[in-house]
Length: 334
Ligand code: ADP
Ligand code: MG
Image (cartoon, rainbow, N blue to C red; front, side, top):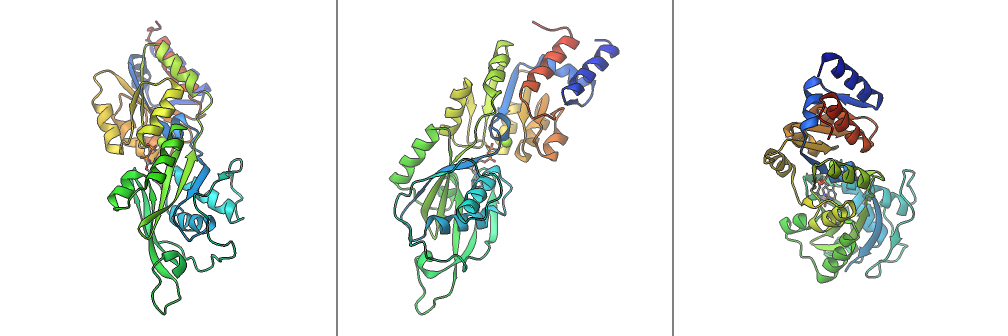
């Protein structure tokens, strides 16, 4: 391609809100044979909402459980954290953020009387985020919730609260009952991501979180396949949810329960010219490792930094626009 053609190509890209970092990047995109998509925030909208919840084996009310969960998640940056916080805020009547159309609440066992007060719940201490697994910390609660009242002591007491997936619970030695497992299986088949809440050593709630697909996702995946590209999905989310989502998108190649390092290994292991499309902090190493890293708009600064292409409009159609433009510029339209 002539320098003029490259300039024209870059200009057309810019008019679509596609930022290309140099002529090399524009050239490489026409050779892409494999394209790997992150799930959360890339194929999905990245605005997850709690759509269902179950309580198990607890004296605590749903409000109390949500208050404890929110006390931890306010210290997490994960998209799931905002779903939990919004849902808690909604229940506590303090939500002004978007919370999505009325979560259906179906309690597995009966909660405590609504009269119980939340005043004694303090902010979580020693909060630890575990990448790809969840978050844990300590919250002061009254004796009726801690389940192990200290004789003669009525005041609040620190209990360990753990939020996360099966790996998180396994690491922390929290048993998962058949009821919990069955519920999660059902919800995961419906594309939900389940967040378990453990309090003082046992699971007291499961929150089913839905993050809808971007409306253009399916069409874009199909169009990429028509152009001869192998489309892959990688996610830190669990296998069942990942498969359910992949099925909706007609993606056959799925890699789930993938920690950030595993995403990089997957990219490095590709024998073909590979593109990575992602949004999050988690994805930056994979974006940098790919032959062509594509950051989608709502993405974090660090992802934008690591990428060769930045799609400012957060529209997956622009992945096609970018590839087609490169093919056109370098005369390889098939
Ligand atoms: P993704 O590739 O989808 O962005 P991550 O690696 O960020 O996934 O997270 C993987 C999984 O770890 C999530 O699906 C969730 O089960 C769990 N997880 C991570 N952070 C949190 C959190 N703050 N609260 C609850 N669960 C979490
Ligand atoms: Mg993501």
